[in-house]
Length: 137
Image 1 (cartoon, rainbow, N blue to C red):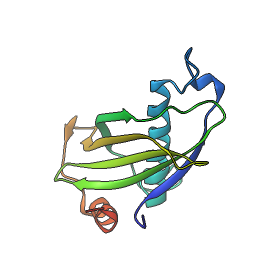
Image 2: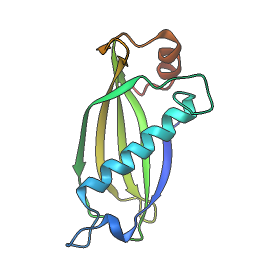
Image 3: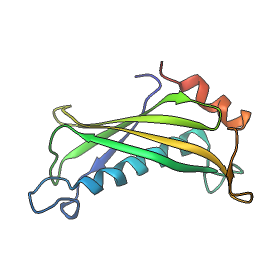
Image 4: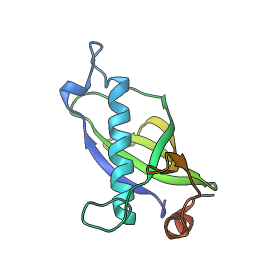
């Protein structure tokens, strides 16, 4: 997809469990890496920019469809699927790079948060203008 941001992840042995497949908790690390790099690509929250990352993760869900194993290369694609007043949702698809088998589908909802006031706020227009052009309908 043109609006999709993709990263590759190498599965390390330490990310597997006693059954030999990727442990369910490891997927959330892959998803976090994908989201972080996605936001950096947009210019949101980078250490060397003036942009501050004022989002908190409100919800995340992952459905496991196939097994992945140590030494697999995985592709994690990220798309913006919904933009609300105070939050937005990203969808992730994890596939094996070798066979393009879909391993998992995931979603994450992020809420704009004012840490000084400890409350949610509307997504600023400056950030909304970065998200809207890449919204997948």
